[in-house]
Amino acid sequence: MNTKRFLTTYGPMFGIWILIVLLFGVLSDNFLTTRTFLTIAGQVPPLVIICCGMTLILIIGGIDLSVGSVLALSASLLCVALARWELALPVAAFLAIFAGFLMGAFNGAISVLLKIPSFVVTLGTLKIAFGLAMLVTASETVPVGTTLEPLAQRISGIGLPVSFLVAIVFVILFQVILSKTVYGRYLVAIGTNEKAVQLAGIPTNLRKISVYAITGALVGVASIFFAARLGAANADAGNGLELSAIAAVVIGGTSLTGGRGSVVNSFVGAMIILTLDSGLAQIGAAEFAKHMVTGIVIVVAVLLDALRGDFLQTLKNRFRKTA
Image (cartoon, rainbow, N blue to C red):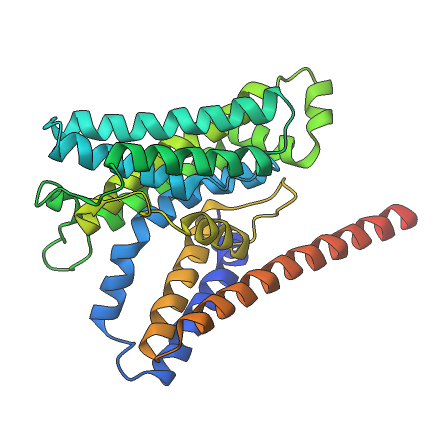
């Protein structure tokens, strides 16, 4: 990708984030500090890793409302396996990731094979995963002490958490998968016109199910870093995370109707969400104001997406008339 195309594709989103940073820098004397950005960086990994999968799901025209509860289930399994079952960290981490994978595969299979809207299926899975997390933890918070601290440690010299760099690697990997591989191109094609893909003789069901399964596994990975940052987990661990992930992806320009999206822009969308939360907290905004501002940002992003879609369709129609 040349410089001009890179700036055209990703520049606007980074520009919006910088403007938000500068705004809060003006409103709060303590915002433009190393401590603020390191705090935000510590919150990035779970949300951004989930956004990698959520971007793919929205691109194929689906949605997943269960990621918050699935994260709670995976994190609960991880902490219980470490603290109560006394399993080794690699085994406990595998259990967390595998649990997320199974829940994601379940979402995909039920939604795709039975032709049930993903909104309905994942809403049900949200409650199932929450109930399982309560069962696993016995409705208690399960601490793990210092077992997971190495995953949350900071890199000497720059102070960034290791987990932040891991999240960046995931963003790059999934952006390459989306834009540079046949699998990624098929996902975009499915979201754009699934019938056309099927008529071309390309099976779509397995690919769609795989997206949900991959997202579930990513939620399992995110749960490890979530538990590492807090040193504990419970059934409420991922409360509201599904809305933050969807908001970040939509703000990043991924279309709710499918066929268009960018993992890198979803990353910037996540940075915008986290920066808004941090900035509003520093200027002393009430809790209700934080939710309202985030909600307004989401609505504006959706409106812009709809207007952009109408604008592009108008241009296509005019082009066809003049052709």
